[in-house]
Amino acid sequence: PEAITVSELANRMTERVADVVKSLMQNGIMATSTQTIDADTAELVIEEFGHKVQRVSDADVEDVIQQVEDAPEDLEPRAPVVTIMGHVDHGKTSLLDAIRNARVAGGEAGGITQHIGAYQVEQDGKALTFLDTPGHAAFTAMRARGAQVTDIVVLVVAADDAVMPQTVEAINHARAAEVPMIVAINKVDRPGANPDKVRTDLLQHEVIVEKMSGDVQDVEVSATEGTGIDALLEAIALQAEILELKANPNRAAVGAVVEAQLDVGRGPVATVLVQNGTLKQGDIFVVGEQWGKVRAMENDQGKRVKSAGPSVPVEVLGLNGTPAAGDVLNVVDTEAQAREIAEFRAAQAKDKRAAAGAAMTLEQMMSKA
Ligand code: GTP
Ligand code: MG
Figure (tube, rainbow, N blue to C red):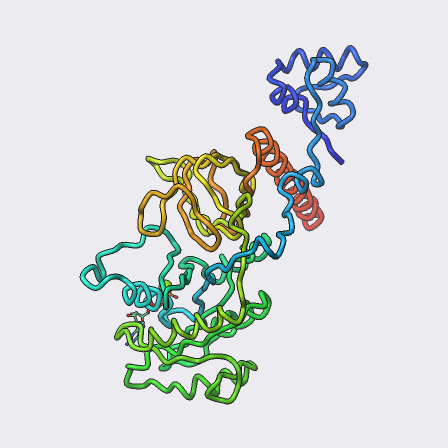
């Protein structure tokens, strides 16, 4: 169960280790700084030093970041979050570029650089959010962490290569996540392009596209020529309409980290996709094992914003550490809560790693014997 080393306990109380050891001794417990004491003993010591005992448990964490069920009348339509997946070199990045370029105001085509790994475009006055980063590994990691970020998967299949191993993986990911798929048959400009081969290949994986009388939308595109992009965006908008995606913009924000890194000048920076509520400058949050206070936010075009609502990706500054892709962000009331939850999670993760390490050593010992 719960336990803590003497030095860690001293650390958390900001007391000297020697004083803690002495206090333990007075209670008849002989322990050195590296030794572990149980939670009850720790509580005794903490009280003796005149501190308040605050045991954080999974239940407490759940309490603080509780996902209050939104009342139906509080829900408003939100943009779909679209992830592009497919086999290596089938044109995922090119397609994302083509979509963005198709939606950039005429004169500026190609002039607007994308600042973060996600962006929004407009289709018939409605926003669509595209995620750039999730390769298959990131997608899996996100789902493992419980962050379901994608509403629609666009499966890119090159018409000159047809269905390949990672195409099948992507199909399986979309199925496991239970999100609808749209097939973008790419590179139709290529001399050897055979879109129908893609369609028949997909049949073998139980993906039946509309042209084969199924219900999965299929669109022929050329990312490099820019053809079929409008049709693809229409297909996405249509699929989104069917999903009737909604969120409550008037609540504490919940989001997911799309990517994060330590920036030399700015410190830890995370691209966060807001999934529910509205993230505002000054908000205090916990994200995975880290916490922070929103110091500044930038949108996908590098512009400062003061708030970000559902389905909006933003770059967030003000973290105390670098979170992992897929970590869930929850806005909480106080810094104390944020810090406590983050520390609790970090300690838990440390315990898990230690346990895994111990098991490994035992295994290694056994294999050597
Ligand atoms: P990875 O990220 O490495 O998995 O690749 P990707 O799926 O992002 O493919 P990418 O967009 O990098 O495209 C791979 C190659 O195919 C590049 O050389 C592109 O220029 C080319 N390509 C992509 N789309 C098209 C297309 O529609 N037509 C033609 N002719 N070439 C394309
Ligand atoms: Mg790519």
